[in-house]
Image (cartoon, rainbow, N blue to C red; front, top):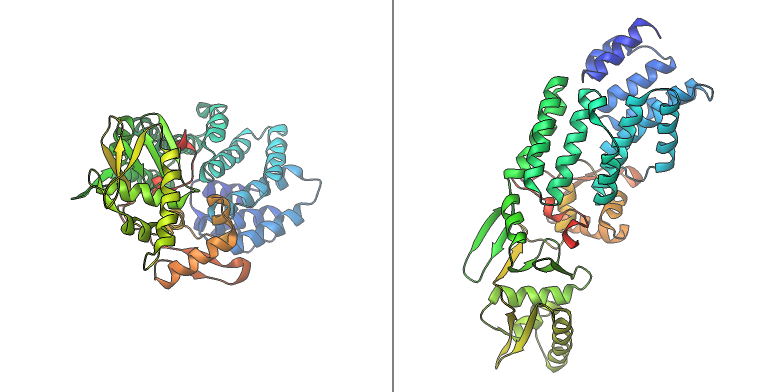
Length: 405
């Protein structure tokens, strides 16, 4: 490898893509094409980057498996950055094995971190934690130590362990400053801001209170009867009742909880739950059926009592708290994913949200009509973005099993 290629690679490792391009912009050999592709990725030109890496892989040929494996890792990183989450894990695993076989343990570890970050994004926190525990960051350069700590902090925040998150962020900040890479330092700083940003609201019959992640952690540690409108669950201590797949029941319990200790009229509950403009006897009969189902679901933690005009919630030995997102929206989960500032395809959003692509497309079209999101590109290249609401944390709307365990 010649000195110019080595200098360009060092510039990329230091987060200086323009310095790398100054050295190799006019070269067409395989190594230069690969480095140019990585440089364009650092400059957020993902389409050009993918093209250059494909050309580099063809130029390297089948016998240069180490170089091709590094290109696979670079393509996977670009796919992750551009929120194209459909890339095949088997290809990345094979590339990681090739790197390890040839003694390139740093890039092999980098590939593993890419896999783990993808699992975190998909809400597979247990799988990510197990894989992360197998890696020793002390044997790796500072940039990967910062990545390791950032993943630890993200998982801790998703699990509402704010103390562990702060500790991990301190390690990430120290490692990031050692690298002197501005983008990495900024990523750590942005992640740290989430800890102190408003994350949710407590709604009562009379007022609202804004919560931060530490406040939410304390709330979940209490014995309150919590209606979690971020995750569509009912929580009482360690018991969690998931109602994400039963939206009518969740709407009913939220309506009762927000009025507690008062009752709610039958007509008001029916209008909310069934989204109707008027109520007749058939609707009231349907309401009675759904209230019976709600009693069955909540029988271990609360009763639903009939009153002269409607129904009231009667929890057992606890106060009632409704925790809602900062901004109520029918498509809050889609907005939460877009709030990271990256450009997403509808297929990637569907994968992360465990929903059909058509359902996500309808949600995006509705949000676009309301002026909350925007798109660019056409067909498979179409991407959706939104400008994040400054100072708001959306972690509670992201997919994870932590809130139901």
